[in-house]
Picture 1 (cartoon, rainbow, N blue to C red):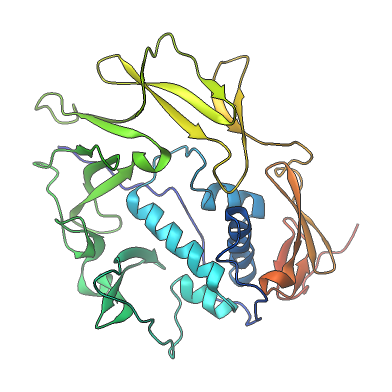
Picture 2 (spheres, rainbow, N blue to C red):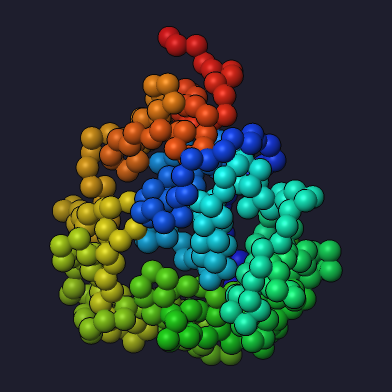
Amino acid sequence: MRQAGPLVLFGLLLSCGGGNAPRARDWSDESLLDRAIDFCLKNAACTEDRTPIAECVETTVDLQALPSSLPTRRDLEELVELRACYNRATTCQEVLDCAGVPTDDEEPRDCDPATFGASCATRMGVSLLRHCVNGAVIETDCTKLGLTCAFDSEGKNSCVAETCNPGTYDMNCDEESGNLNMCGSIDGGGGNMVYQYACGAIGMGCAVDLGTEDPGDEQAICTGREELCDPAATAAGCEGLTLTACIANFDGSGNMARWDCAAGAIHRLCFIDPASGGGSCAVTTDECDPALDQGSCDGTSLFVCVDGTMQTIDCREHGIATCKPGTPALCAESREDEPEEE
């Protein structure tokens, strides 16, 4: 049986509630870091999620950071769409709409069926298909139909019951995109669907070894896409801000892979640990420690450490009324229940 379970890489805890403060700026055309901070500030101010800003930026928003687990294509689609929606939001209600809590009088957005790409989202335990119908963007609740939103047999997002049989489906690699296709159980329901794990999203290729006919004998890996190398003799290295590594193939050979540490929302440096020889994208500065510095307030300004660098954020520029002290300190609609200063 060739089966792979679903992966949740980008988690976001959202809940109903929040104010209705107007936002002063449109952040959709700002830098990736500014957009990431805006996303995380609004998430904290308009929901009950108290994730520190630094943690939110690094683990939820920064797609270019090397992930500890491999993202699926749907993970990436949902995150990109959600981040863009938050950046456009002008009120907390609009933020909640992005999170799947729509208002009764919400007007559908116009779209072109020929160019609009359908997408899936799982919100509040509901599997939603966002697609273009009769020139308007609508969300269809696949769950009410006894279905789930997933890729159909043509690789398009739709409401489906099942798209593969784990007993007969062979995992495979799309060499052009770098996607690994595997048959796995539908999260929270019966049936199975094809999950596309996005090696290409982190600059890598993919490979599959189906092995023998014995269940569980198959293997799938992300591979390097560049020049040949010897994994046993090639250590991780740095080419300026680019991290390099020789990634082993099934036959023992290798291909180089490269990651631009400075390409994400957080500008990082390439670092080689002298003790272990392992490579990573490390913090640019150490003027502060986000694990220890949970932020502070001065009026409407939030001072917070994001990956080693202190950021000064005017909450009002993000449409949020003030800065609320606490652990962590966050932008908020009011300073009610403010902790007493020691």
